[in-house]
Length: 471
Image (cartoon, rainbow, N blue to C red):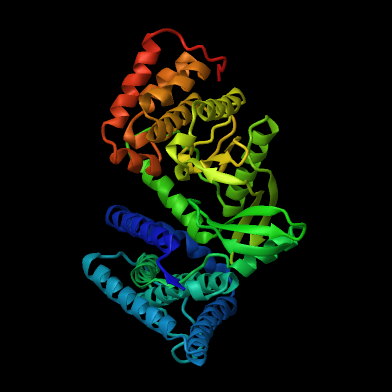
């Protein structure tokens, strides 16, 4: 399956930012940085020349072997799409480096070491030209969806080795660093333009991961539900219990990072925390918040397993709920008792300073027996700030009002939430502060959000909230 991956978009954005920083740094501090690097590497004078020669020649030789091996494998397996992708990436990287060479005057220092052996092109100072380094970096970036992690890491280690060897045996400059960044940018751009094989965990990988975590599954199928940031499945384990399974991979991780980066540059206070360094930590955090919510009495599905799934993915398995999310039920089924039950669950969260952070209709389930459940703590936080707790209230008011109108949405909130939080929530009833799904729903009813703000303001004016929840 060919698709455009958020991971490649993220790489493209980061590479563009890095290239811009390098160009500005070269323009402002090029002479100083090159002179500093030259002084720093002068210690190589004390290293025996034969050791430097072994490292330089070995790095160059291994790079040729890796690149040649990639081409041979692609031809042998008839990976024509791979060949076309890396060819285009190499051409784009070479062209971009040529453009940068014309636009930037780089400062150089004399070579630090002169090789004393002759092995043809392997020992010439121009072996790893800037165009060559850029092309190899572009090829490796563009080939990443087809390569195992170990091969990718080895490839980048060799590219860095080429850059270091160029710095040692050729006139020292910032050209090599610019070339690597240009190659990274070009390879990512080609993948975004052409697409690449999916890097999401396959169904077999999900089944294998769950079995390894002690939850063997006898049946698994894709779920047609709103599961933002993951690939959802319904399953049945070997004991006959139903499961809801979320698979997350590099694509979901990159999409989350892009979303956080976008929110970071906006002039708004979303209360976001720093993203976790790895996908594993993010998945573990979701499981932890769900366990914490269930421990304090919030009706949410039990966590059955946290597991790994190739390639580089993770799986969360929950007990499945018999019922439907509120975005799929008839508005007549969202009774005042249902609304009251939702707000009592949110009061439990607030009492223990747990923030859900995505209280849209798709994450509130009406069980087959009439019970209300909260699901998906993927954005949840413990020890939540007053801002996050108030934003939960605003999101729930806005999302529920789509089904029941402004007055009925506000009434149970005024009974269960303290006045200070309601006042903060009133200030968060803005389109930019709401989830994408809730914003979309309100676009279809443009008068609803002003009516909701007016109804909440009226409730605040009639007297103090009777809510026992002091957050």
